[in-house]
Length: 360
Image 1 (tube, rainbow, N blue to C red):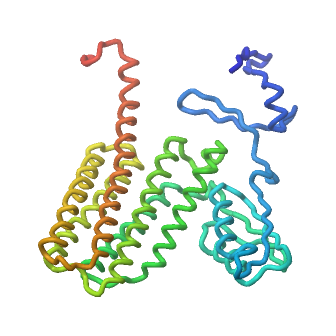
Image 2 (tube, rainbow, N blue to C red; image 1 turned 180 degrees about the horizontal axis):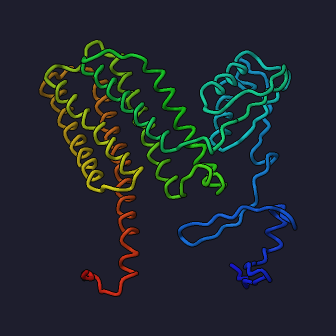
Image 3 (cartoon, rainbow, N blue to C red; image 1 turned 90 degrees about the vertical axis):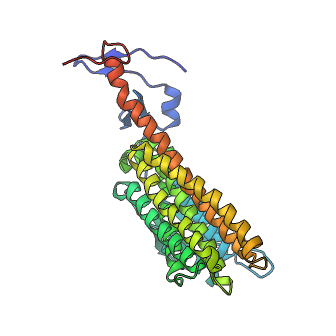
């Protein structure tokens, strides 16, 4: 760390010189416009503006033709690369073919453009394809995306458990799973960009701590959707639903999770009502404890020959409850921190000692 002395110019403006080495490294010279970010913790951050031709935001990938022997680049590997570039915050990816693209590779590129929010194919030829993200952070609401993800994950959970207990058939499950993946991928992308660029955080309208907890909540909700997919897979694979003796108990426990998730997400987003977060944590503990008893009764008391795949479904339910608890823990920390920050000015600003109030 080095120190600099604040100077005052004739019009009363305060100035401070910038380290030459840093300025040269960021491409800053006299006349360059920089971004100033002020934060509630008292920090002032100077950051060079992001350029459209910034090489860190653009990638060129060269792919070879895929073949059955494992050489070249398959459509799956190309899709993984494009998804990784999206998550890393890239604005543009140019895919160049070592020869020409095969059908599998072209399908992979189109699949990515179809399944990732904001991604579009801007140029396409026999030897090159340009994929660009056209979504502006000013147009994105991370909070709304988290709420949408909650809705999708909860609906998947309810439908999967209903199919598992024989209450209802599965319908439109794959489409909702893809939507959950799209929503989380978008939140993850903007969170990653926010780590690199404070102007991204400003454009999203969130503080850095808020963006972190929103990303954490979205990650847990995406995992709830994944667990619902596992439960649905068991429900589709087994010939019969849960035995009636345990189906009602499983349904009751499964329904506690959406209620806990709703409360947990609300606290994580708003940073208030710590009691709701504690209730969500208590619901998680009850679900996990009672499911262990359900599994024991299912395989020992009710039906010793029960399909072993029911155990996988019960474990997925337990994991779902734990993911809801993780969101509640984030909400509880946020509520406690928010309450402390709200109370701090009163403690620091008043002359009375702690525990005494000034009479009117």
